[in-house]
Amino acid sequence: MPAGQECACRKRREAARKAKLDAARPKSGERGYDADWRAVRRQYLAANPQCSHDGCTSPAAEVDHIKSVADRPDLRLHWSNLRGYCKRHHSQRTARDQSFGMSAEARARTWPAGLRKSAIPLTIVCGPPGSGKTTWVREHAGPQDIVIDLDVLKAELSGTSMYSAGPEWTGPALERRNTLLRSLATSTAPAAWFIVSAPEPAERTWWQAQLGGRLHVMDTDKATCLARIGSDHRRIGHRDRMMKRCEEWFSTARGDMARFVAPNPTARPLSTKLFRELGISNHGDEKFYCG
Picture (cartoon, rainbow, N blue to C red):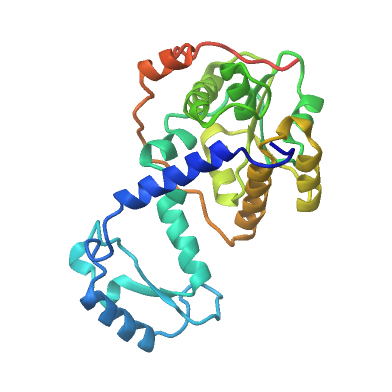
């Protein structure tokens, strides 16, 4: 496989995942978007031609339900439950609601419940791929400080090099990460450093509200991030995917996309069977230190 290209098998898995989601999704009519809806939509757009997003002057092209049809089917055709959006802001709203296809369990693992304020000095380091988060923490953390980095956890759990772990390791690494985050409430280590992408200010605020500490957002520009990804030999075979993630980070940070959703308070833990198949412990009592 040529250097810098994404693995074909990964692309096939992603295509299969999307096809499975599409196949499971009800048809538009089954979701309440029938002939009656299309008539109401036309009438609403004619009467409300401008996007309802604050400050937007673009024409409305889509009609959004304020309360979803699933939650309030009785309000499906009520104008009081509708608002018009331009395509950009409708896509942003849809992405926020669907969290890019993440299940409720995946969202609850990504943004876990049950966190408490850190008992030790904590720095939450945010930024896109290639911004130098791990390097910055390595330069500032002490030898006995706790460093919580999902990429490092995936590599350690899978026994592979940095950035090489397959997607099956994301769930176990998130659970291990969340166990470590919860342990900060009773930690006696000198300090802790938590590395997380968090492109949206709302997400960064949420993390800080849960854990306390201070925020540090990397100010590396997009061109530098992309150049670093392209030249990092550890990312060979993953560069296309990571460059895409970098582009998405900056797009989300600008407000063109939305990802953060307040978490579901509960999520089923991954099964013991899965941990056993992966050959790792699910007790979560290991500690990870830098240095």
